Image: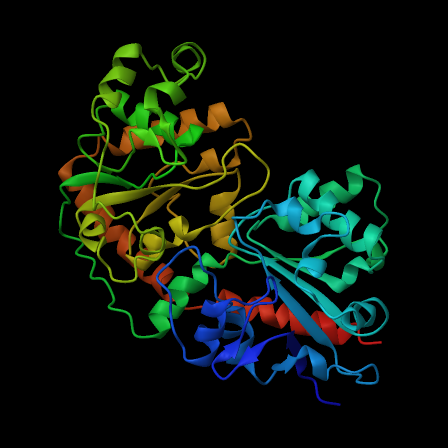
Length: 443
C-alpha cells in the first residue's frame, strides 16, 4: 500500500491549492493560476501545502476533493488554516461552523467519521487553548457532527499544549478513550520562518566579542500589554531606558483613542507591584513616548525581518529582552519574537509564561543561566516573576565594560550553537508526528 497521505483541497490550480477555509475569490484564483501576489495583509493565500506537506512528497500528495471515493483505503487530511480576523469559537459555532462555511463535500465528513479521513485545524500562529476554545471544538466536532475527536488534528502555537489539554480533560471529566480526545500537536511555526530563511542562504551575522555595544538592551514592543508596561517602567526606574533601544507607542494601536496614561494603573504600580515605582517614574517614561526605533509599520516585515534591516540594533546592543505575547495565562507562546534574537546571534531574556526558557532548551537552544539568574522562569506568581526579571536587568545594567567584554567572549559559542540549531526544521518534526500518527491508526 502507498504510505503517502492525501492532502485534500476543493480547489487546486497550476501553482498549487487554494485554502479550504473560505470559498476562493479573484485574488485566490490569481495566486494559484499565475502566481500573482497581493501586498494586502487583508488577503490570505494558503501556503500550508508549500510550508509543511509539499517539501515532503515522499509522505504526502495533494488531491482534489472530488477524487476521494468511498473505496479508497489511503488516508487523507482536509486542512483548514484559521486567521486572527475571525473569533476562534466562531469557526466552531452550531451548524454554521467551518465545515459548512467552507462547503466541504459531506461525503468527506462521513469518511472522516467512519474511515481514514482526518480534519486538520491549523492555528499555529496563535495559542488558543482556553477552556471556552477547547469546549467549542469538542462541541462542534463531537457534539454537532459526531466525529471521533482523534480524527481532529489541532496544530497550535501553545508549546505546552499537552499540559494544558490534559488539565482541561481532567477538569471536565473527559474520558481517556481516543475518540473523546483531540490529537493536539504543538508547533512553534514562527521558528520555521527563520529556518527557511537560513536554508535559503541567509546572510549570517557576525558577532564581535571585543566590541562593547553602545546600548544595553533591545526591547521591541508594539501592542500594550501589562508585562511590557511594567518592565518598561522598571527599566526607567533603574535609568536604563536611555541606555537601551526600546520601542513603545504613545497610543493603543487597536484603539488610538486610548493612550498610555489611560492604560496605566498608577495606583497598582506604585502601591502593589513591588517594583518600587513612583509617579515621577511613570511621568518621566510617558514624556519619552513614542519611542521609535526603525519606524517600520508593516506587520509582516516587523515579524519576519528577513531583510536584516534591524541588524544594526542587535549588533549595537548587549541583550534582547523578548516580551512574549502571553504572560499571566497558562498558554505558553514562542512567537517570532523569541527567534529573532537567535537569527541575529544575540543573547536573550524571554519575558513570558513560566517555563518558557526551559521550553527553548527542549527545542535544543542554549540559554544564559551561567551569566544571570534564570530562576525567574520557575516563578508562578506574575508579580514575583516580574520583580525577579527586573532585578536581572538591573544587575546587567551595572556591568563594567570589562565584564561586558568577558561576557561577549564567553557567550559567543552559545550564540553560534543557537544559530545552527535554528536550522533544525520544526515543520519536519510536526509532519513526521502527523504521518506516523495517521499510519498507526489506519482502519
